Image 1: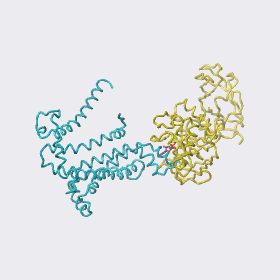
Image 2: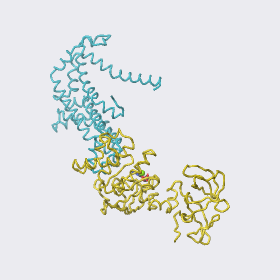
Image 3: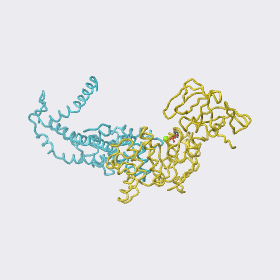
Image 4: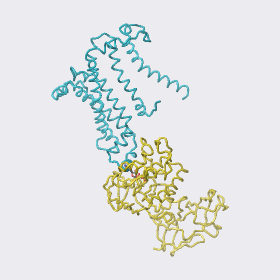
Amino acid sequence: MAGIVIDRIAKSFGAVSALKEVSLEIADGEFVALLGPSGCGKTTLLRIMAGLETRSSGRVLIGGRDVSDLKPYERGLAMVFQNYAVFPHMTVYDNVGFGLTMQKKPKDVIDRQVKKAAALLHIEPYLERYPAKLSGGQRQRVAVARALAVEPAVLLMDEPLSNLDALLRLEMRAELKSVLREAGTTTVYVTHDQTEAMGLADRIAVMHGGKIVQIAPPTEVYSRPASMFVGGFVGSPPMNFIPVEARAGSVALGGQTLAAPRASGALTLGFRGEDVTLAPPGEAMPFTVRVAEPMGSHLLLTGRIGDAVVRVVAPPASIVKAGETVGLRLDPDRIVFMDAATGAATDLAA
Amino acid sequence: MTGPRRFLFVTGVITLCAWILVPIYLIALGSFGGRPAVFKWPKDWLPWNASLDAMLLFLRIEGVWNAAINSVIAAGLTMIFSILLGAPAGYALARFDFRGANAFRLLVLLTRAFPLAILALPLTVIFIKLGLYDTPFGVSLVHTALALPFAALVTASLFVGIPRELEEAAWVFGCTRWQAFTKVVLPLALPGVAAAAIFAFVISWNEVFAASVLTVRERTLTAYLLTVLSESPLHYRFAGGFILIVPSVLFIFAVRKYLFAMWGVSSK
Ligand SMILES: Nc1ncnc2c1ncn2[C@@H]1O[C@H](COP(=O)(O)OP(=O)(O)O)[C@@H](O)[C@H]1O
Ligand SMILES: [Mg+2]
């Protein structure tokens, strides 16, 4: 078992700067998700950890050892690739045992570990088959089993579920979580799917434009995003943002007065769609509903406050129709203020 | 497939087959039918009085066996050299972004732009000096030069087709670059590599000019037949031609599975 330290890793491809001095510390046994939109540098960072990509500067430490200049096979880690990368010319058994065979483990040890990993991922019935005879989900399991069979100190995964259909993804997600929790493996998991990151990770590192913009536990990333970008990227529906004006240290909204982090000036107020209660229009912030979508578990309302588009999650039994104007009351404990110019969160306490 | 497309497809297949098979069949008729079959017109399209006489006589011509063995040695060596040199070049072209990769690709093909006729005399001189003259090994060196461009380019396209992720997975799970190549890339590329090897074999087997210039007594079969048969009756020539064709056809038939695999078609 081993923790990971990423120390000011930068990477440029010619003129394109893919990573800008990224630093990150991952504790032993921790599950960290690298979350961000496509092209933000997640894969590049993961591949640098694995030794599959060269870095422009910085260091990678695994278990306190500087592995920056080591070959992939010297780093003692395992990886699950986006397209599974199971070897088509080997049986499932040989695939799962590949890492152990390379380590020249005795046959009986290999057999034991392969069976154990196969049992964990429910692929025992296919051990003698070739990958071509497996479905996408089964191949995925083989790829994970291959990684777990070597009992790695560190497991890296690059969008391992993105090629599976929605239902299978849900199932595999839950299974991965329980399997990895049991194994206690330090895991770095790359994804652009925020529900995956929220569901799996101990901490989420949100990346944007080659930088880590926030690293925090899922609930904190969700309710206290470090910037407008994070708030908008994490959560479905995304966080709502409305421009407000602070006067004398507070912000007046409809019938509500909220404490502001600044005495005066332009701010952006962020709130989650479920952190509001509906009120009669006269008593709270007026919200003009354009579309009402009954989702079963809740009623999703899309409309406007002033010029800003806002999405609100109302109880399923609420009676709201399109075109209606209702009042919104915010939960003062669950709002965030952002700097209107930079989009970065401003601390209430500061 | 719908009506007209199916019709086109079937006609195309028949035409292509006829294109290849009719000449081969005519040569076979000539070589098994003896003297009358060669001159008879219109032809008997079925071999009524086929006999192995011409063939057997042909096989008894002095030196045919020696020449055949020389051919096999030269073609075999050509095959080995082309793959041993061509596959690494192909791998480099497929996997590394090195300066001049495109120029290299072009240069590889340019080796084919030199007419052998120009090279023949200097080559002969050098070969005599080196003691390579009149040996199958010497012939195979020249044939390797001819086959190498194809070997390099064909294997490059094979390696491009093997996902890099597979190789990277091998590295992560404990392989050095070389181990990953031998354990993952090579097995997957093997059908195509085999096809490239056979192609090199056939190039050497069929090549006549360099083989004629660079040998005197240790002729390859093609070079030998060229000299011997120009003096022989026509049905012997057919027999000789048939014997030249057969190995290539058999060889390709034997490895058709791999050729199809390379083209992404499966055969039953
Ligand atoms: N081999 C490469 N050559 C050039 N640019 C690359 C290469 N790999 C990645 N990039 C660039 O680096 C940036 C980050 O890519 P990547 O790490 O794959 O993003 P992500 O995995 O977050 O989608 C992108 O702008 C991408 O175009
Ligand atoms: Mg990626």
